[in-house]
Image (tube, rainbow, N blue to C red; front, top):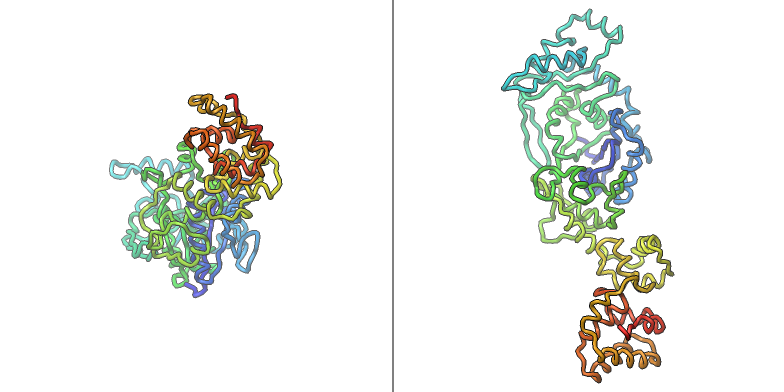
Length: 497
């Protein structure tokens, strides 16, 4: 491993970027920056059958929104490019052939029909899904069973083929994981994975090892679902003669469904009604579109499987760069809770400056048909900020400051309305018509009038709030009245309810 820390994030452009992928990028980014290293974006687009147009751009946009900015990428370049696997095709063939020459891989000319026949022929009760491995390779059409002349003839005729790794028998394949410690795998349980496909493109196994070596990657952060592939990669590093340059691996715990029963999938979001993407992908709204701040999103991802050893839950990117410790990543999966995610966002909205929130809030208001100058929006936002969990909620919380409520809960007002109320509000309107319009004057005169009419505060305060905002919500009622102005308030007070 190089002393120069280089951490890569290598997603496949096959669709929207799951929050688990973003967390992988975050943890890798934090580790790289803490160690004054480089964070690299490499696009693994070797599987052309699953390539989705626009997915790479989506990945880049996601990282930018989160503030996880790569030092090297397809967009930024660097001395270890290209940064798309599809542009490195020649390298893979060369190293696959090298493995064949060293006896650690072989050509396999089996047709799809022959592979299907093999799986049927050797299926048993104990082994219902036979693999292409040490037991079956000797019965198949490959360069281990054919003569050298037969192999040459097939290759000269451009006969479709793949290159497979030759997994050794009876070996214990060992490596150390940063999070999980020493791991050992029995080679007898592994199959001979395809390294180079029939179209000349590498599989993940070959490409990831070759690219990590050529790009001098020192640390690999990836999900624990890749643990079964790790022994194949360990063998490839060894067989290619690069064992001393192999990166340190950190296999991150899964993000689990809310009930803890299995990995959180893209389908779960649709089924349970919450996002699993950071940004909108096709018809699936992301955290951004639902009104999450990037700071909150990063915070909630960071604590899914990691903590700093204290009870603290709120972490900015700056906090994480200071406190993140890969040794405090849990081995066990972390349950995702959308309710907790919303709580994080509410906390970040509370902590945000009005100026930083202004562009997003102004956009939400404009979409609802509310247009106001920045000064007024900022005044109102400061009053309702603590009441907003998700940014679109700002419309409900701020609407009545800029236009009369479309609906007023007159039913609640009328339930306890009396002639005394009519007298109170008639006199209040007369007094306020000649009152200097400040919050303090309004509150003082209102309370004095309550005392004069010998009424209870709640009996008149709630109807007054409903008259102004339409319902039982909102910040201080005199703050609202002060902002609305004399003419608007007197117009909204319903004496004849």
